Length: 230
Image (cartoon, rainbow, N blue to C red; front, side, top):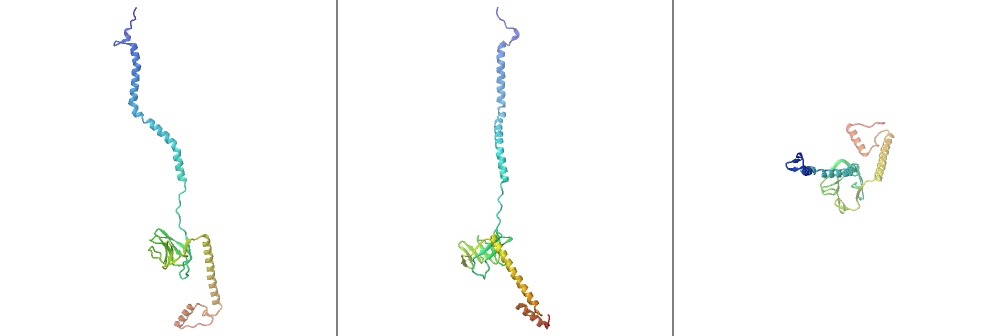
């Protein structure tokens, strides 16, 4: 007896077992086709994942670098010295030796200007890039004293022993001591004058010569005379 396949199992002359074999093959090809279509749009995922992993690894280093940059102390702008000391000038006729104090708020050629304490002498930087000394604060290169490469030239003559340096604490203490001693001398001198004037009946003969002469001229012009006790 021959095997006869049922009618329902035959479609378009194709046996059912052949159809069963082809269906999985068709599904596989359809899946591969879908992946081929979606591959361009999915290709960015791998680079994104790599970039995300790299960013995560570098994040602590970037954060620590930023923290170090914030914690690093900023370099402070160097302030010019407030006082200089000059020494070695042989002549006392021009008072260059001693302390020179900065003139706050005044600059020439971007550099500070210094003034000799108690004198009208200035030390500054001129337009030629040299330090110079003059009775006027100016930038022109014609100061009374100019600091050349070989040393100071003052009043047209080289003065190799003349030096200008930054004042130290010892210099400042010595300057304070000198000022205090000078003040004591002035006070003592004035006290002596007052004592001399109080020891006589009249102020005549107790004043300086200039004041005595001025007083005499004034008395003569007014026709006045000094009486006893005045």
